[in-house]
Length: 276
Image (cartoon, rainbow, N blue to C red; front, side):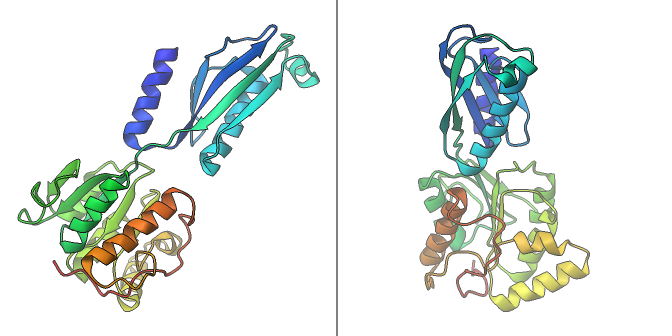
């Protein structure tokens, strides 16, 4: 059982999925499981492993899902001889403490476009702990020389690549292509995709045009409201390096909970589009 839990932890970390690990850290008297028993709880409530079953495991699962949201671990104490245990047929006569800790996987960042801003963005994001993927339809830009830190570099038709790629639910996607049409095509390909973060570079006028176009095509207004555009924290960024800093800062803020992922507040740099 422990091997299955550890294997599931590895898979969750590799995909960047949010989950929490529940471990029995102390027992006293008769308990259904020993110290060290583990259970992995996914964001959607799926579990691998057990800490004994019954009402206490259900309660720990609920607390684990809360901890996935808050990112703050805690110790929880259960008395297996109380009235609730009696009602569920779990009178063991002991007590146990469990430590519930959120997993903190390195998130996957998909950089759509491989121009000047993207080059600086990919390097800074890698340094900040993101697993960087890069896609562009130009091989002279999407290559290992320009993106030595990326774990994946794809020279492909951008919309097709986005539709065919299995993006993890915890993925971050940043659209920084070389022009309005390419940005629109990329955002259209992602429309409706339930991932943690989507952001697009651009001026407010460009953003308004793209929203109008996609809404007219039937893309959900609620989904578009979750897209961060213009992208980046408002720091007065002008150069590609500065714009990259503002974007990475926003990604970190989302990752650490300083900015809510569904906050569509327009806080991006005033920049019409990247010049490749």
